[in-house]
Amino acid sequence: MRIPDEKIEDVRNATDVVDLISAYVKLKKRGKNYIGLCPFHTEKTPSFTVSAEKQMYHCFGCGKGGNVFTFVMEMEKVSFVEAVRSLADRAGIVLPTDTQTPTEEESEAERLYAATRMAGLLFHEQLRSAEGQAALDYFHGRGFTDDTIRIFGLGYSLNSWDAFVNRARAENIAPDLLVKAGLARTREDGSLYDYFRGRAMFPIVSPTSRVLGFGARKMREDDPIAGKYINSPESPIYNKSRVLYGLSHSRDAIRHEDAVIMVEGYADLITLFQAGVQHVVASSGTALTQDQLVLLGRYTKNLILVYDADSAGSSAMVRGIDLALEQGLDVQVVELPQDEDPDSFVRVHGGKEFLSLVASSTSFIEFKARQFVKAGYFTSPERTTRAIRSIVESIAKIGDELKRNLFIKDVAQKFNVYESVLHREMEQILSRGRTENRIRTERAVPRLTEPTVSTTAEPQPAGPIPPEERDLLKLFLDGDRTIISHILETITLEDFSDLRARTLIRMVLDILDVRGTVDANAVVSQLTDEELKSIVTDVSLSRYELSKGWTAMEKEIDEPEPIQIARDALVVFRRKAIRRAMERNQQTLRQVTQQGGDTRPILERQQELVQMLKSLETSGARSKPSAQNRAS
Image 1: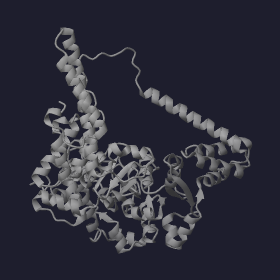
Image 2: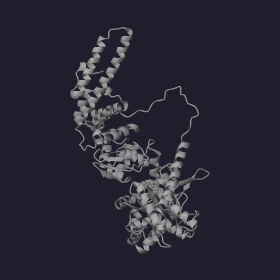
Image 3: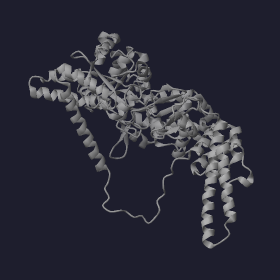
């Protein structure tokens, strides 16, 4: 059973697009819209626009656009039905029972989310069982309160080979999904067994709190798996290089503080969060990746790395400094006292003392210098050169030239080296980087040794929609029936030269006939073609094409009235139609001249068209043309 249209509309009206997208992107108000870094492609300058008024978004960089449903579909990789369900749960709207039953049409991702959600609820439930008492005692021993355990959904997996598999079977979850989600494994005989057995469970969730996978901590000495922690294997919904533990809980605090603290482990993060230091995420012991840094960059540009000298995981995290600098992040480092990690430090000294350490964090330059000192550098000219060159190489990763120069000045003063020498060194590093990039680009482009000839015509990509047609499409999407009627009194749908504009306007008119009202959001909800979705959001969130010239002239004026926009666009329509008629008339004149025929009617028609064009240029031709004067 499909979800009723009125329920879909209720969910859409109950979900604010700005609030939804803010879970993924740090948005800033600009005029009546919001802007941020696009979550769908890597960029350093914001081109992603969200309209609270139209309840839509569009990226002017990659072209992605849509409404609340399409955003969830893109981010969670789920179908429209699952997006509606997810947002209905978020809004507290109950959908008809039949629509909750999984169908074959649902995507694999939806079914995987259902499996991991069931697992998270089961593990949390099992924490209160007799066997789960040991894990509960462990969490309490780490200082976690019952509220914290609930907030983070901590749990326990029974020490059994098939307890989870049997429960999943009772919940009608397909065996292949359990394997793909990393919750079960297959024996040689094809039977399944539980992947997590007898371990304390830490759910790993998306920014919108959907369970992606789990981290599992060893509880028993006789556990046959050697590692203290094991994590879910990667799956279609879980990619560890793109996930940061705790982000779903900390994103609001990160935006508020305009900074993020990076720690290593699950317990480190939870202890800090409980102590009031909530702008924190955990790398889960993995080296920082570009995808993780891009994700953080949507919330803040200020990254604070917590360095634990005794942890190999922290050392791996610190090696991501250069990568963070390349992503345009400002990097500071907090060095903990010897034999301390964030968890132990906070449990002894408290959150306020930890924040004092954060306040006294050092720049990446100072941190690298200290590391070189500890490693015995600066004891000879040769090793000192290598240390300083390494620091300059890090500075060269920074894209902002002014910031690079300020860091060079700092290094010159710190190590008593001429700035000019450091600038030459940095220029050599930058030059090598540019050369390497050019070589990589050239290798990526295949060279043709001879021209290729195709015997069939290749379809050509559609060009941009003509400006006047974009403006009229925007007016149709705004849904003002008076304006739409005025336009249709002057031109017909077939007058539009761009097939995409014609298709979208026909859809607008169909929706208008059925519902009596229409807007761009309603059109997006009915579209499946990604290009058409992009066109709708692009046109809806852009200025009118024929008024952009004022912006180029640095004129600060209000957007013209819709009726004026319609009239101006229709003038351009008529001008183009007259010129096309003149071209066709000229071709006819040449043919008749070659054949020796009577050219007087053709010349009279040409003069008539010239007069029509002159009249249009002088008066603006605001009114509808008469039938005999319509250029065809």
